Image 1 (cartoon, rainbow, N blue to C red):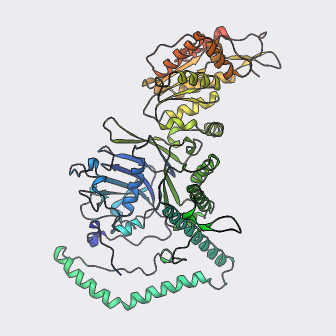
Image 2 (image 1 turned 180 degrees about the vertical axis):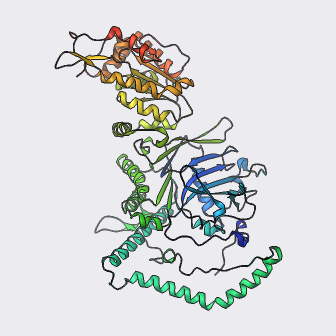
Length: 618
């Protein structure tokens, strides 16, 4: 059988690089950070992706999102000849020695001995351990891989973590890549691959359950097969011992000419990774589907929607397996790289697909990185998500920044509950992640009025996103999320009054909505100080401020009719929207740009109800 061509990155390693024996009980490594520069449309400014359980890449078409997914695939194929770049992968189609394509990967490890202690950095605050590697391409072809030497605080010129690329790859999550326009047979192969993994995992579980149920039970057929493979490996290793010693001595003499005192040791490791080398099905199984009792055709003969649905069913099966922590620790982790999961799916299927993707990492053995043009795939109520907006800068090169991580937004339990309800009511609320200027409004009336203005002059308001919070409390939650953006935003909310008249007692009491004003003020404090946030309030509410009366019912529709019939009212709403879009524009009468609770309190004093007033709130 022909040998695989050795990559240039597979140069002979110095014996000093050899890693220690890994601890089989330690958790397997997982991805932490990916950095890409000078690759395809990505320029010299690195695009850094912090890898959470779920990473969602958003941005316009042809912005470079797929290139980021491709980058991890490349480094995982290093050593097998699959990491080669063509001239088209270089910026402008030509190699630049001063700016070579570069991919850096930082991996979380749980055992120092596996990669070698010289490569492991321990975070002083979290205690987590990281290994950092870099791949560079000086010309079309294979890359050069180097490791960050923690002691020397620099990239090592010769040695690498884990040694050879194929050994290093075995210590990183397995990539499962699913592109949007892959051939049907390629999609079918990926589904079969995932399904085979699920069957193998179930087989392992059954084996453990049988063994654990009664310790004196005879070994299963699966146990016997593994034992036989181990014995066969040991036998071969023993028979080959003389030949191994001869090779070790010859290599040792050659190495010692360059590195005096060095020796070479060949460790066959016959007992390691036996299960990974065992394939339950050879050749690969064929998956068929169709109506029960009818003709079943292969998956690659089905429509794109059926292929994608089968994929989600397989991923759901994997997600619902839920192994124990001990089981998950011993298995090699996986990372799903998927382009536009919403393609070819019915709206109901899209929502189910989102749930499956977010549940998959709960098995502790999966990370997910997707690109999408659908805000439905962003779940603001989840804790395990990073949203990265990828877009081209003024030079045409791609710029990417992690713009949202729940831990940095400091969302409390009330925020999460509000966002969960908002996601259910409006699955497109996350549209603001995709770019443009965002204006957060409190209710449906403002949302309807502003969208009517935009429909009259769409070119003027291009790129403007009106986000309705559907309640004052959720305005605070959305502000915490938007604070992570580099770009500004605006908020319009009702000032409300400090008191309302209760319907039952007809007595004045404190208004709970007034308390939210202070929370909104605190959430926007830093952004307002930096000039990135404009905060306006309608006094005391939008309808009374801009239509001079408050409708009893169907407020959005009533406002729309008023704007169509009254050009003056329409002009006031235009002026308000312009003030929210442009922080330098004047604020129209009816709204106020406020900075303290005391200022707002003085403005609403004339609107406070008396005990005899008609109740406006329960």
